[in-house]
Image 1 (cartoon, rainbow, N blue to C red):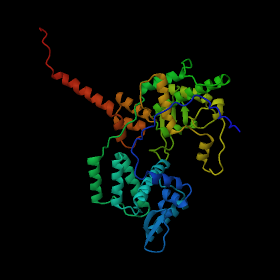
Image 2: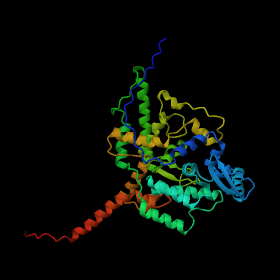
Image 3: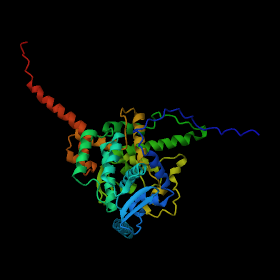
Length: 437
């Protein structure tokens, strides 16, 4: 009996790619981390330990309660367990979370690293000892982790010990001196900065996207589907032009951009507009701020809205045959109104923002490399500095709480302007040329 032929693969065959080099060397506990992450979906004790370590600690009646959950060592006293359980019950009773969603995800990732380290080297998870924390950080340093990453891990470990009413392993003169030494001798505070997507590049990219006569790169499609594919691409270009201009005008974070809603936009009689922010990273209470939109941006938003469909979110995926105009089914298990809306009308992801920036720049011939979802934010800050805005004005426009971030973004134009002023003044020291020579 002959075997059936393999199904023919549709589309262009994938191009062979060299394996991508890992950014960092693997950590010694990589296998344990993968094991814990996989088993968290099936083992309730592990899942609880990853999310709330106090829930996995069950007292046995003695003063010191050693407990191993899948070989993870917890040595919480009965009083510590009682106090952490009381905190948990209080949160459940009054229905509140300790952290915002993004902070909780970062904390969980750091905590998973700590659990894997303790499992690999057979160390006590809680209470965390300074000797174990120092070994953990030294291994991360040897693996090339940066200062900001290490600081976040230290905060996560300290925070989890605080939640379980354990002493802070980094509290004390010796711990502070140890960390200061590591920063001085082995770490650098320098961080990579997103490349700017400034005003000139934004105008060039959006002008290209608006023009339907520009030649687009062809997409493989059957003859009967060509019209549908081209129509979807035209809608996608309108969306991208509106997205890039909106991101630049409002100096939005990528998470704020993909969460933008139509009912927050107001069009003024003169053709300009405003956008009303809700809850953001620096406004967790949702007091709200109103920011300006240029007339060009309002026009791009209007052109996109005419074909965008009924989604309440401004920016979403564009699918052929207008498939993005149809709501998706929402599972009954999702009860929160905002979560149900996101499932019914899924917006873009933050990763797709950088992809859109890079695609538009490449098609329009803009020579900007390595754009990310925050590149318009960086470009907006630098353009304001070039135009003579003060650091306070840049901070207010970008909605930063800390003046260090706008100062960091503006470092390059500030350095250039300071250097030009300096050498203009130095020109005065040159002797005047003799007119008779």
